[in-house]
Amino acid sequence: MPIIYFIGMAGSGKTTITKNFGDWLLESSESVARINLDPGVVNLPYNPDYDIRTLVELSTVMKREALGPNGALIRSMEIMIENIDTIADTLKKTLFGKSWVLIDTPGQLELFAFRELGNIIIKKLNRQDSLAIFIVDASNLNKGSDFVMSVLLSLATKFHLEIDVIMILNKVDLVGEKISKFMNIFFDDPDAFVNEMLRDNTGILGELSFDLVDILRQYLPPTRIVSVSAKKKIGFNDLYSIINDALCECGDLR
Image (cartoon, rainbow, N blue to C red; front, side, top):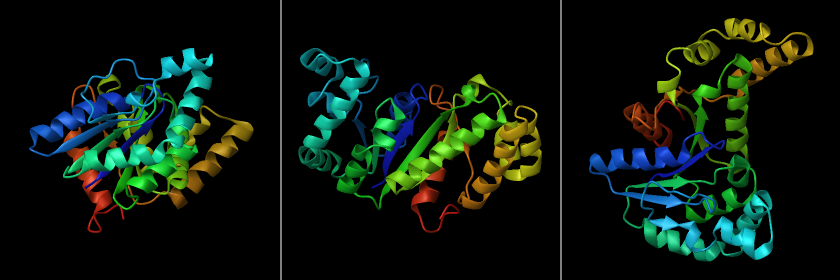
């Protein structure tokens, strides 16, 4: 049973892909559980099999404890950790018998990827079958250094959560072919990629860019990057394939 954690910056499309990839799997006769772990979401476009807002909801925490949005989000994470055994037991019952589990993580990346909560939940549910999909908003990649920063964040997520992480590009329907000059050149012609970055960054920034690309090429596992449009359900066959590759010893990502 794959447990897929959708992770990414605010607005990258985590909730949309949880809904639409889940719908796509259901249309393929898969049994799917969708889990919402974002206490701050207002409008959820899918019917979750488990919704963390039944335990803790952001606006309620803000009113009850006289906190602003950021403080209330951190307090909400603390409440989730305080009740982690109850959450884990409920999730295990909810997920029983499902062939796919899609987990919609909090809107702010750091709350799940770089704090205690993410590691605890992954450990409680089953680290071995867990995989994170790090979603990057392709419309925000305007220069080579933007792409490098996204790769760095995906690697940092992998190191902290201690599970495999696949980086995908979302919203490709909005950017057309422009993104290929970063994505493809990075893997196929690193020297050309560095030259592209040097046009945007000179001096110390240029040297740092060169060193970062060299380091990333050494530490990145064999991979390919899938491009999708969560809104238009584009690229879901490729997403399905790369997930199976990552979770299977026979795949090319191990």
